[in-house]
Length: 83
Image 1 (cartoon, rainbow, N blue to C red):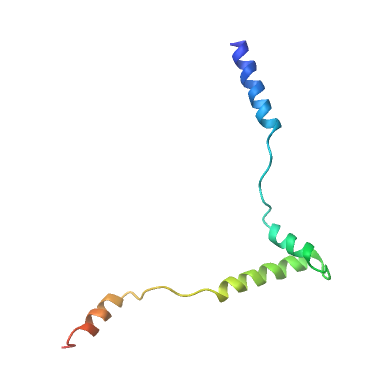
Image 2 (image 1 turned 90 degrees about the horizontal axis):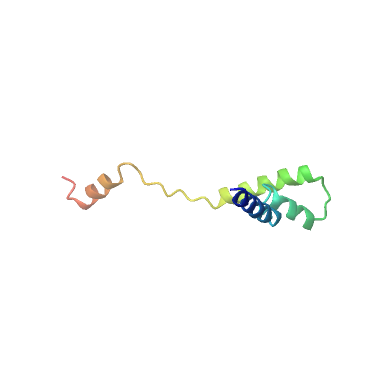
């Protein structure tokens, strides 16, 4: 039992020694864009504008693909003799 406990503890320690954090910060894109900019404004102001521009870009590409509730009925009516 002592050997097994030590073996498992050593295995966990070995894995943890090789652990690499691969998480990406929430504002990584804004930070990269700021680093590539001329840095003429403070980062906080740049980040706010960057995020607002990103939202505006997404909203500009939004297409309403919803289907009206009565679409099937309208199609059936248009295909009928309308009597």
